[in-house]
Image (cartoon, rainbow, N blue to C red; front, top):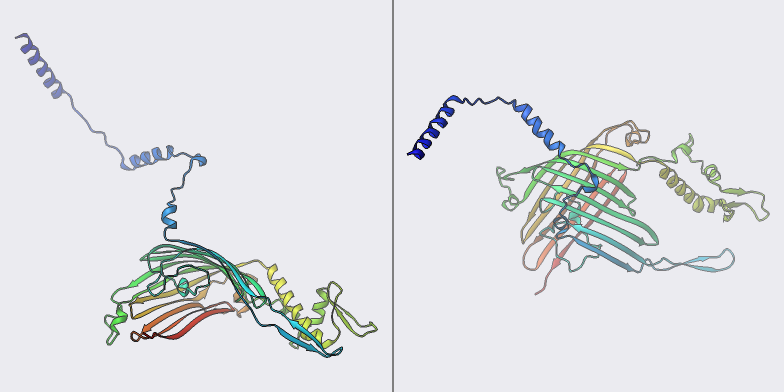
Length: 399
């Protein structure tokens, strides 16, 4: 009975307490609450740089990439015999050293459907599709390739590097190109909005059905290029009012000398004092062109690179079937911002705008099991520089 009474009193007490106690909810400012949460997160950040760890998935970045290196070579121009009768018959053989190239690179670019799979890469493959704006797959792709080349006795460096990210709605790309043979070198970045055309050719009468299977997209954005001031002519200041060039005075300024009182006749000396010509004809035909070329190159190398901001428009179309493939792309820069620099290309173009453009085409068609035709090529024009590659032909397979 005592236990029962104690239990009953306890329940009554709890009930009374519950009836007398009033719970009130305090209103909290939602903005203040978010600020407090943000402050708490900031206060817990570790500002010690030594503990910073970059979560980079190198396995994903390097997956399917190829690292390659190769040395290629072969004979160059055949030796040439040069005859002279100045002091009797004399023969001099002009030899051209053999051609070769040393290439190192790493690439991660999805192979297009029309591209064959190589057993090994030697760096000399004509991968025209590397210049296209859009690749086969979305995501991150890259190419880093450098080479040292000797061709027909001339040596030069080539480099081609780019990073690009392709999405359904935008394209980001950074590229560095140095082509010693074409004498072009620049660094370019671009950011573009991409529009993918759905149902391509669907409402056009008599439009080929096979082309409707292709993927077409357009893009627009901004491009930034850093390069030497192309268009600058160092020899312009040496041109006389009548249009001729005061080349002898320029040569004297560069350290050359002319000896008129030598007993053996007139002599032309280089900056080291060596005789390079004993007649005006040889001086003008052989020495002066070298003087002008060296001077122009020296003056251009003194100048700093300039930056060019441009509007860029482009398209890309890709179609692949077992019998027909077509890949085409193009880029146009119709407008360039004039910053008023001393060596801006606007100055050398009369203050007018100009068109810079690039494009490519890869086409192949198998007429039947035996006969097929192909056309491949790319063309580039930036400032006053042009460079291009092409290949076309016919294949016939005999069974």
